[in-house]
Length: 517
Image 1 (cartoon, rainbow, N blue to C red):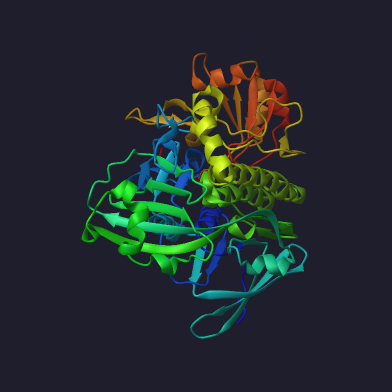
Image 2 (cartoon, one colour):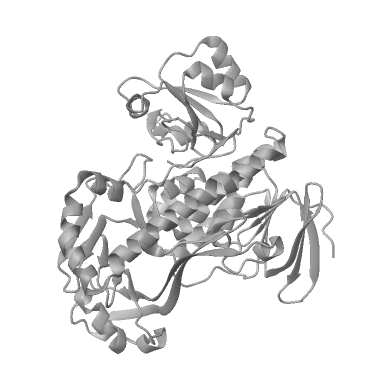
């Protein structure tokens, strides 16, 4: 069977990355076909954390309030030794960061996926086919890609073409194989036990992430929800999840947090083992084929950025695809996706590896060093700010989309700051509420009427910020008068307002993106 009228974009894989990518494209009016081998999301919890930058992406989709109802803010990070003595504590004085959301958020991935899929089902420009196993992907003509997939129940084969294919199909990506790309190992591999527990009993523990810094049996504890808790323990040589299949076996590892609980009070939701790896694909693009999420990179979990990195990929790429499809942006802009995201993902992976090794390796000497050094690190103001703010690295590159050379702000995210009342009820609006998928020129004066008209003619928004506001202070602190902010919230360049007005590309106004914040 051949589908005659192909979509604009085919998304292979309906995990969080694929569904968010399709939803962001739908907000620009792009027709998408989403294909997934499975009929329902994986029912067991996997990712459990996202930061305020990723929360902001959910806010762009109008899902901030819905996510708040299923998530739990975390207070920070506590490092403890083998005897559970506190080595260092990085607690947050405020939960809400510069982007308007809690800076660390715990959640149940199946609940998030149901929320995302429900949102996707409301998009008129998206077709979602479950039980579709993709068997072949190829660039077949100028600006066209063909996908072959079969029905997992009937075996019926289908063919369709699109302008773009996004491979969001995980670590064993079919799209990556079709591209001839391969994963490059970054020299980190550890086997860990993952334990999810439900209980009505209140576990009397600090409301943040606990990192057990013990080279013999490193571990992590975190509260996920009102009744849900997650533990992760590094497995010793020869151990598997089968050695910890019931509460009698796993109880001694949990006891420092749960105490002598009766087994009847705890329900094991899942016990499994994972091999944590650090890998990055050697290519993320082949013509109009792209890799996103776990298909492009695997991040150790020590900084909680595995799922978030995939959502960053989706945000970075989708507005560029929408611009190319509309004719606003030239084809060459698509190459900026890999250039920007590979370096960013690699930097996050390096940070995760460094922290993982620092907290879990080194033998007795490492344990001694942590007891001596960790308390001093916790008192260092700069390090505390780094851990608590959890801001991701700046994007790097010099292209029509991003100019970071000798620029104080380019590559960083514009704060999603409050800019004024949003409606008759005086609900405050933020930058994303006004931007709605457009370029924004944020300036503190110095922009004439001619330049304002030029910006408007290119579909961008001028946002004048008053002295004393958060955005005015942000510009002032970086010693610039203005910042040109891309549709993904990244500063493209900063400097004089008049120069940036002329540098703004044409990017058609978009009025369909809605925000719930």
